Amino acid sequence: MLKGFDTEMEIKGIVFALISAVFVGLVYITIRKIGSGDHPVVVVNYFMIISAVIGGVLAINDWVNPVGKEWLVLLSLGVFGYFAQLYMTKAMQAGETNQVAPLKYLEVIFTMIIGLFWFGEIYTIWSVLGILLIVLGLTLNVVTKKK
Image (cartoon, rainbow, N blue to C red):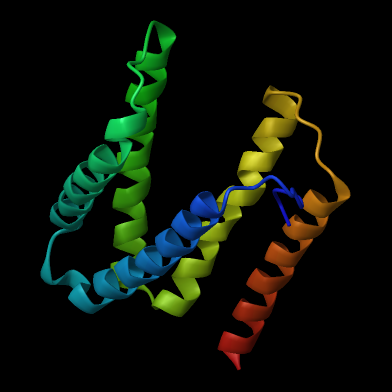
């Protein structure tokens, strides 16, 4: 719903998104099962290495070398992504998976707000409805888990 309904969407992208969602769920469960047995930095480093190898292999055919400012963007994505993953791992190790994992969906809301103000993006009614569904789902998850 956030993307909108596009008849020209490639099935390959949808399949990759669904596979990614399954693996993210498995990662969250695995991190929780590991608990505090391993330091969060160790968990994050393994996660980053495995992700880089798999992502690198999948990107071989479509790779384009970054130029100019793109290197700075890639570096900032790596640094911010590392710290985000580190603190998410700490949260997963400390709390219950079913309470911590849904908070990850807040990034969609923040991303759309940044897109609106920073890049001047315009969102459709479907995008707004998608945001409302995310917020409703997060709220219902918190309320039902307290009972």
